[in-house]
Image 1 (cartoon, rainbow, N blue to C red):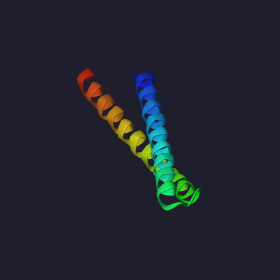
Image 2: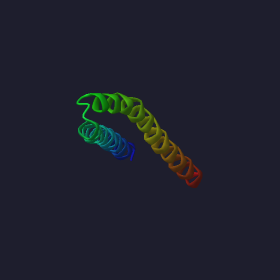
Image 3: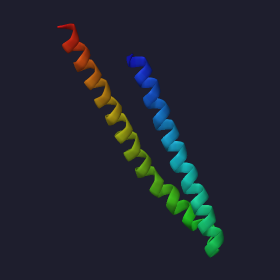
Image 4: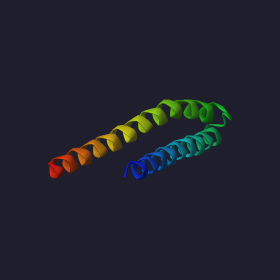
Amino acid sequence: MVWTLLVVVIGQVGCLTLAVILASVFAGLWLDSHFDTKPVFTLVLLFAGIPLSVFLMLYASRKSLARLKEKYETEEKENK
């Protein structure tokens, strides 16, 4: 059960990180082409995406950990 949750958390974190990076790059490229400022918006959005990725990783990990704790407590109550 713990391994399954760990795999789910790793998958969520990986997908969230990939989504943030891709969104930053594509939005930056679009803004750069629109305003004719080649690497400026892409780099700014990419560097702004780093703290966002860290925040989302922590959020997903905490939520999954809370779910695991809740499940463990209910199983322990049932076993008593």
